[in-house]
Structures are given as C-alpha cells and as structure tokens.
Amino acid sequence: MKTTATDLELALEVDEAARVAHQMRLAREKRDRTARIMKHIFLIIVSCVMLYPLFWLVASSFKPENEIFGNLGLWPSQFNFDNYTKGWNALPKPFTIFYINSAIVTVLSVIGNLISCSFAAYAFARLKFNGRTLFFGLMMMTLMIPYHVVLIPQYVQFLALGWVDTYLPLVVPRFLASDAFFIFLMVQFFRQLPRELDEAAMIDGCSPYKIYWAIILPLSLPAMGTAAIFSLIWVWEDFLAPLIYLNDIKSYTVPLALRLFLDQEGQSAFGQMFAMSVLSLVPVVIFFVLFQKLIVRGIATSGMK
Amino acid sequence: MRRFIARNAPGYVFLLPWFIGFFLLALGPILASLYLSFTRYDMVADPRWVGLDNFEYMFTRDRRFWKALEVTFTFVALSVPARLAMALGVAMLLDKGLRTIGLYRAIFYLPSLLGASIAIAILWRQLFTADGVVNQVLAVVGIQGPGWITDPETSLYTLVALAMWQFGSPMLIFLAGLRGIPRDLYEAAEIDGTPRWRRFTRITLPLLAPVIFFNLVLQTIEAFKTFSSAFIISNGTGAPADSLLFYTVYLFNEAFKFFRMGYASALAWVLLVIIAVFTAIAFFTSKYWVHYENDRD
Image (cartoon, rainbow over all chains, first blue to last red; front, side, top):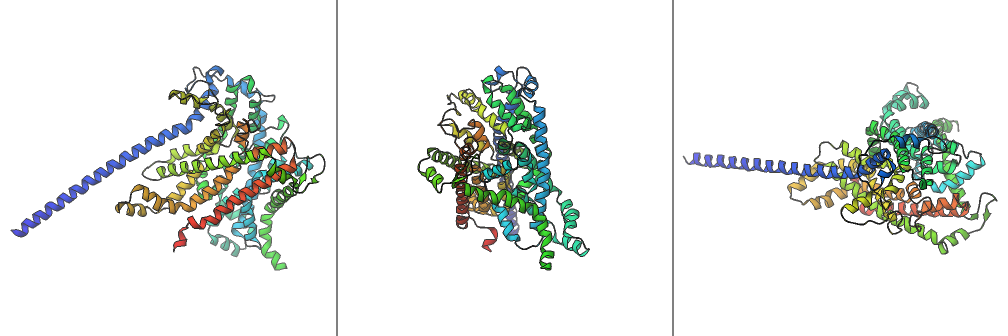
C-alpha cells in the first residue's frame, strides 16, 4: 500500500510539474508574442517616419504650387500632372537631353567598372605574381583617399588634354579601375570560388586568360551584378565630378540640371522642381526593388557603403 | 628572366588597367597636389614656389579654415555615433524574434541609396524651411520651430538628421555580424538569469566589436568626405554664416570658384592627413577593444 501511495504522490508531483511547465511555456509564448507585436508596432512607426519625406516629395510633385507648403497631408486636392509636363521643359534645355547624357555616362561607366575591376580582382584573387601583396595593400589604401585630394591635379591633367566639357574625365577613369571598392568586392567573391576549378582547367591546358573568361566570370555573375547595380546607382547620382567637368548646359547630367532649379528659386517653381526630383529617383528605386537581394548580399559580403 | 616573365605575365596583364589608373589617377595626383601645396597657382600662370606660406597662412591667419574644421569635426562627432547607434539598435530589433524582416530591411536601407542624390538634398532643404514639414509637425505639439536652414545655430543639425536618416547601410553590416553570434550563448545566459542589459554588454558588444570597429572607421571617413548634400543645402557657399562650411565645400570653393589651386591643394593634403590619422588611431587602439574570434583559441 505504502508503495502505491508514494507512487501516487510521485505521479501527482510529476503531473503538477508538467502543469507548471506547461503554464510557464504558455506565459512565455504569450510574453514573446506581446514582445513581437510591440516590436512590429515600433518598427512600423520608424518605417513611417523614414518614408514620410519620400511620400511628401511624391505628393508635393502632384500638388498645385499653393498647396505644397503649410500642408502635411499626402493627398493632393486634385492630381495635377502639370508639374511634370512643365518641369520637363522648364530649363533652357529639356530633360530629355539630360537623361540621355546621364544614360551615356552611366552605361559607359558601368561597363568600364565591370571590365577593369574584374581584371584587377582576378589578378589579386587568383594569380600569383611578384609584388601582389604590395599592390593589394596600395589598392586598399586608395579606398581611404578622399576624391578631393586627387581632384585638382586630375583637373589640371584633363584640362591640358582638352577633356573638360566632354564625358572623358567621367568615363575613362572607370576603365582604369579607379573605383577600388568594386575591386575589393570582386576579390572577396573570387576568393570563395574553389581553387580546384583553376587547377583542373590548368591541367587541361587552359591559359589564365581563358580561365578568367570561361570559368571565373560565368561563376561570378552575382558579384558582377552587385557591382553593376552599385556603380549604376552611384554614377547616376554622382554630382561632384560632373559639377567640375561639365560647364555647357547641353552636356549636363540630371543632378546638375536639378541644381539649376535651385538657382531660379525666386520664380517659385517648387512643384516642378519636386516633380523632376521624383523622376530622377525613379531609376534608383526601380533597380533597388528589382535587385534588392543582390544589393543586400553585396553589402553583407563587402561590408561597405 | 624568361621564367620571371612567364610566371608574372598573366598577373601584370590583368592588372594593367589598374596600374595605369593607380599611377595616373591616384599616386601621380597625390604627389602633384603635395607639390602644388607649396606653390601659388591660379591655372593661368605657372605654379610659383612659396615654401610653407600656404600652411602658415592656413594655421595662423585663415579663420575660415578653422571654421571649416570646427563644422566638419562637429558633424563627424554628432552624426557618426548617432548613425551607428541607430543602426545597431534597429539591427538588434530585426535580428531576433521576428519571422519576416525583408520589408523592414528594404525600407530602412532605401534612404542610404537615395541619400547621396541631389534630389534628396533639395527635398531636405524644403523640409526644414520656416514653413516646412518639420515645423508643421512641431506646431502640432505646440513648438514653434526655428528656420532650421537659415539659422546658423541649427543648420548643421539638419545635416546630422540627413546622416541619421541613412542608417541603413551600417545596419545591414550589423545584421550580418549579429547573425554570426552563436544563439546558444544567449540561451545559456538567459537560463542563468543574466539580465538583458548585461547580455548586451557581455555578449553582443564584445562579439560584435570587429564589426563595430569596421563600421566606425568607414563611417568616420565617409562623414569627413560629405560634400553634395552640404553643398546643395548651403547654396554652394557654406551659408548661413559659414555654419555649413564643410571642409570639402571650402576646398571646392577655394579651388574652383577662386582658382587658388595651390592653397586648395594644401587644404586637400591636410584633409588627407586628418583622415589618415583617424584611421591609424582606430587601427592602433583596436587591439585594446577589438578581439577577433580566433584570437582566443
């Protein structure tokens, strides 16, 4: 009998313990759920604050001039496309020209970056040659150098070559791997590819040039994609170099054209200025939405910008 | 000799564009600007050697140089910690306990991509005018805001706000770093009843130190180089009352508005030295506070 009693007690105790554990788990799950909801609420508020300026910009671009200021609302009393049609032609040259100019500079620069930086990255990541460590160190140091330090001698150089007011000062440096960030990004990626690939190809009689073209490049499309998108966005938004090298309004890129609106601020064309600002951001946003994964991974691997 | 060429040729061939770029666009110009910094040069006449005159003028008599340093250092000191704290805070919120973070991550990162553009600088100017959005919001809670951009007391804070708005890129790097911290450390600490704050200071911070260090160095360099937004918001001059006279804006105006190329080169070299010193300090002190994972084995 005695044993049964203890068994019973034991069973009750076990039962009790299970009950307590179950309650604790429930409480914990509830706590976690509340914490999660609180987090979501907080993050949604932060998101709204972050996005509000952008929404305000878009909304204002559709508003008539007298509704833009003194008005927090995001919904215009009537949707007005005037700002877009008028703004497109508000400057001495239509925006068609500025967009073509920006497109030329951007496309050429992206091509230049991809070719020259992947060459350099391939050499640093996969080939053996004397001075590799030294050159790699120098390359990394150029990451730190502010553009302003090389600006003046470069300007003197390009002026002497008669390149000012052409796109050459904006494009040629990109064919010379001047943007070390992309070299670094690609080196990080190339290093992860298995060595055996090169070795096997070498045994089969492949030259390093063939290995670059037939093995490394096809395997590196994600890295090339990341580099292409970043350089596209940065060149598109680039302001300092065009500001210095382009003087003739015919050759202006979009950011330079936008700045012209500020010079004529007195004429209160805020709506048009906002409309053209929105349009200038559209390509960036589209590329971001389409290639978000590549961009996020690119930052995580390179850890920059 | 032949073996040397055969062994090295492919490497040098692939590196050729970079070599040309390095010598003509980086090393050459850096040395050239060092030379120019000892000259007076207006791009019309040849550079004239003036010894240390530029530097002497800069450090002893040029009030705007000191003002530009003050503005830039204040900006760096305010914007970098603010941006990193924001980035780390949000990254930690996103890292644990939420199933879907993709949309938040995208929303928080978007400003980092757009922030450098002229369109956003233009927008920012209008947000902070006397009757702009920010003051409208403040009016709702009964605060009469200043004319942020036109008031020299407050104008710099608008740029700090713009920098904070772009916390997304360090946030992504922090997120990647947080992923690398083993979960069981937190679980063990939680079972031991370690309070949340201590879990942060004893686990998260030490294990994230390399990433924090990396972000700190990069963001500091970036902050020193701030140009476009300051240029647009201050109308290209550093106005009002030089309160937005960022170092790069001052340098740009000396070079391309007044064509004092020699003096501007001297300014450029001082900037290079400042950035180099900051980077060096970060690297030399890092051994006291950054411990890499494999150090402890």
